[in-house]
Image (cartoon, rainbow, N blue to C red; front, side, top):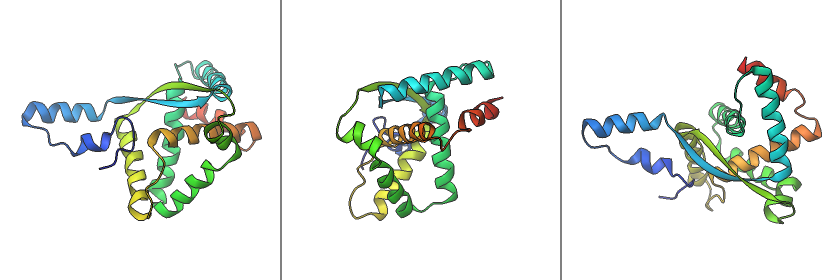
Length: 179
């Protein structure tokens, strides 16, 4: 079976735990967080830092880049759960991957990429892996995307939308959601 992320949560979900202790550990670990490393354009990462500082100050909480990525991922997964069409999703992913800003940083390597370690709920990573598996199931060619690619594209696309002014109220919405 293909691995859709560096942590391969799908494989872990398929493993059958042995005995009571195994089932207990398995149930407990499903609620844990896993660490992923994504590569983000340095400038957009710094913009994200400003956003997380603003949200932290306004909500009087510790809001991190991981939290921002998690919120963006929730949006993607909510959209897919309400519109479970892998063909349409694959088209959308291909459209996003062909955006000039994505091409500039990831295809043509124009600009510095910064490795960013993020922690996401294991269940979220599993859902993203299943989303990619759905796309693979209906497409003739294997999807080139991994969970890490999805997270990078989602992040860069979000920052691009902020810069272009199409998501002007999104930071305020994040603050309202967390209050």
